[in-house]
Length: 496
Image (cartoon, rainbow, N blue to C red; front, side):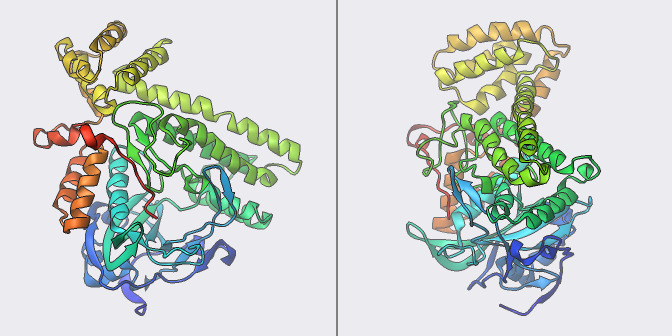
């Protein structure tokens, strides 16, 4: 490890000021030949960082883990977690190191973390490294989610290491610089609850309140208010996932953030033909984290969070349990309201009617029965809302177009009660329904070009397309097309 760099990064490391049982102190492990593959200039500037400095040889050394910047306090965070329902009392950052925290131009605090930066005390016999494919996937998908308006961790940089990693075969290695509001998870609370460490739980809850939910500090029951706020954010987040057809793939409690951001883009994917039972993850053999199960898994994870908070909610265990259960009951109505609000926008409904939920649900059922593409069905509805002659663009996605025709009669009757004209409605619907998503077959193609041929032009082009997901551009029409033939048989892998 090279001596500390003088490169100025405005670190202010609040988590590292917590007791040392919250983390392990260690530097990243240097790599052989770091090369900058991608730098997020806009994000760097938002964080108050100079992109040109980050792209300099010294900056790349820091992004690769070969240097430690002045002011950085590298730590690997401790946490536990339920993974596919089974509890592991110690997980932690097995291949990631938090370099420190910066406060951005808007006064918001962010973690800057290296992922794939070498082994830590939490590596559990792993090598602590990351392969190039998963690093590029996370960069691409996390930035796509951000532009879609979905709370997410983000990617600041991707650096190749010049070293191989071994998974099912020899693969090129890489390091991702990930940015998050924080990396505190439900599993972080579980780590201390499993050890009966009440002092640590109080310190962690206070830290989270100060960092993410300062508005609850003066509430009569701040820990109860904290729990309710986390529930509200997770309910909104999962609704937003469903509205774009996103399947996280590994909704373990260690991947459930307290901030309400999407984290860990391992076996994730976007659905093509609508099917609530869709699973892409190769390791989710039972469909635990299928598309339609996500609204059920989220409150299960939040219940585990509530269990860790019980000693902080009330001295009497029965009272604490009642408080937690009452709070948890708010998830479903919050989720349902957020989902219906989003579906109304996708259908061009901007007033409320008692039959809207049924109308939306009936469309989804018809889509499932007819293998209609999720993204394009909703996108083309915007055209049909302005001109019935454009119905063909929707009907073409249904095995039996008559199923759409029957539903469209009811939809148009409902639209007649809306105040917008056709052009305004189409514009509003197009703003709610992307034309471009990270289509799985397209993602795999750009990753293959980078991994097999060191060709990053397809990756850059796809980043350009996904940067404006709501703006249809004829030159990028192929990116909107669903997979055909062998392209549709798709599985994702966690990349660890």
